[in-house]
Image 1 (tube, helix red, strand yellow):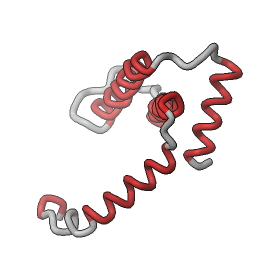
Image 2: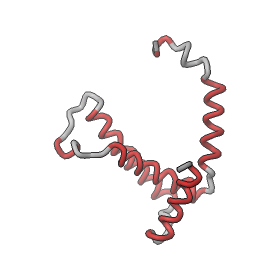
Image 3: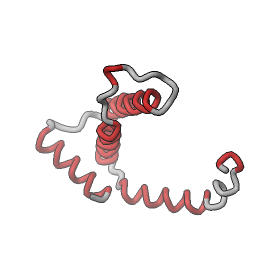
Image 4: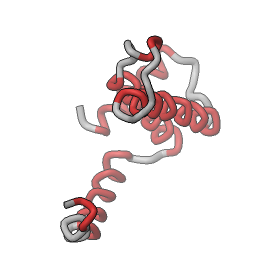
Length: 108
């Protein structure tokens, strides 16, 4: 599935299963909450914090998908073609950072 199809799938899901999109501010708060859940897993599973028993069954992929779902909601409700925006950003980063990371001594 490409990003455009993902945006369409989210929109169809909202229309079929939801009443409407939450407003942008609510979705921004929801996005922050979902990113926090990803951060908790990463910090405990891959970082130095000990993992709580209640967190051991958490699925990182599922939490990342929650983040993506809310990002797609925000894109839809604000009229952003996320596939177009992502491709543009990737082109900008490629041109800007092509040699930058290769020349970064910290990454060697």
